[in-house]
Amino acid sequence: MFYFSASARAAALLLALTAVSACDSSTTQTPVDSGGEQPFQPSAPLTASAPSATSPPPPGTPEKPVSAANPTTPDSLHLLSSDRVGRLRLNTSEQAVLRLIPARRRRKSTRTAEGITYPVYEVTDAQQPTAPPILLEMNGNEQDGFRIWRIRVTDPQYRTADGIGVGSPYGAARQQYGITTIEKTDAGLVAVSDAVKMSWVLDEQSLPPKRPSQLRPTDVPTATRIIGVLVSR
Image (cartoon, rainbow, N blue to C red; front, side, top):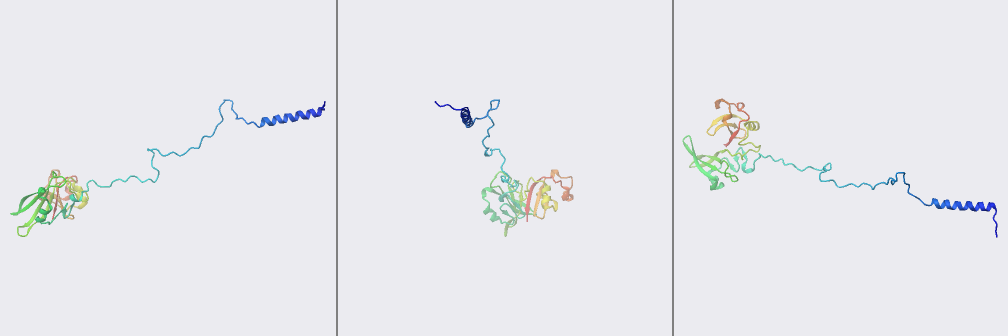
């Protein structure tokens, strides 16, 4: 039977305690605070989401185009210019008018000036048959034939390239084309624009109580309505 000395027994006890301590330190535990809640864990990284339907477009995105069309600008069939109304040009022969305008859209009458009788044609609009017809006034004689010398317009569809026509204020025509004189004619009281060879028939109800011969362009109120347009040679 073996007997260990006291020093040997102490060394063995120390070795055993060291081994137990090493075994306990190898186990890791998640610390829990006094409230029993789990410690903060970092959330997953945020990812960019697609913009919603109501989100504003990114900077630099072009806007939708806006129409710049002028609603008062006529099409080519209703354009007023210094020598024509739509497709009808001044100085066009009567025979050419008859070829150009179908019989269902024209009605012939006559006018007498200085003892001479001339043909006149009322022409209805191809797109709006119920609109006021334009009036083609002829000049000439039976031997040489007749030609358009004046076209009278009361249909508001017909306008200049600047949008001026029946229903426009006198001030717009004066500002755009200038007014040379105010005259009394067989078509009514007109403001003459020599620059474009047009005359604007004025609504006389809004004019000051003066004789036409006394009216100057500046006497006519700018709001006076244009009720007709004359294009003549």
